[in-house]
Image (tube, rainbow, N blue to C red; front, top):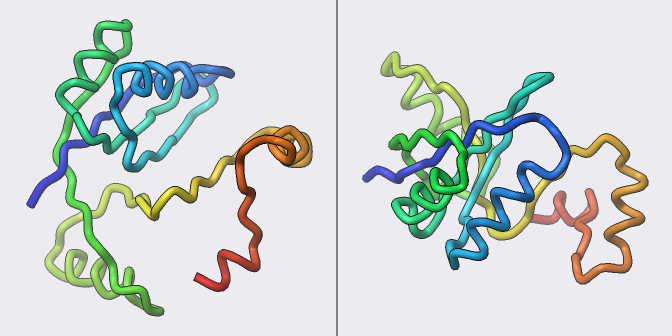
Length: 138
């Protein structure tokens, strides 16, 4: 079973990821998972959405460079070594794993330039910040 992923090429500057997510939200497209990788000047926003064909058209229509590709999504066993066991099956067969990211519920990790400032900005918003202790209790 395969899943369609969209890779969106964006400038590495404030507001570009937000622009993509606003476009998709405005088109009633739900993001199920994502990952961002970056260099000094550019980034790749990888998306799993509920309506990939519509998302592709919306993003291209807004001038973004988008590459669709097929990936697999696995529901891992929730136990120590669950991920390792699945990755070992693929690696032992000689299949290269290019990257991995998580689609765990609605928890999202943000790496920002000023962590303390971002925490302060979000503290009074309708956003629930997740603690390390909570992550440890999964």
